[in-house]
Length: 101
Image (cartoon, rainbow, N blue to C red):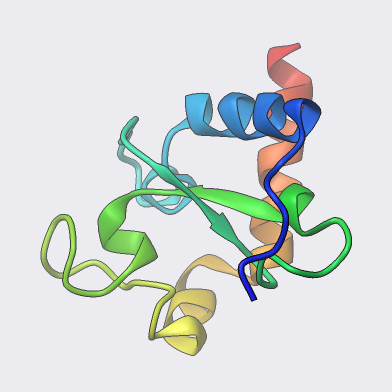
């Protein structure tokens, strides 16, 4: 269930995403540069390491980070109601990366 490790190119993509800061915090008008990479659809499917989001601890998993944030785990529906679908957020991240290039 663990899946394979990300390739060097996927790790570079993760690093570029992480440099954006938490995408949910950004939508809230804040900048939080301390993020982890959240896999949108697990780690085992083909291309899984490219379907990821930069999220701070509080937006990633409930009980971590700043209290009161809506975490994608376990509140996926509430998170998406507030911030948009995870694929919409990924598209936003990709657009931000293109603008930064």
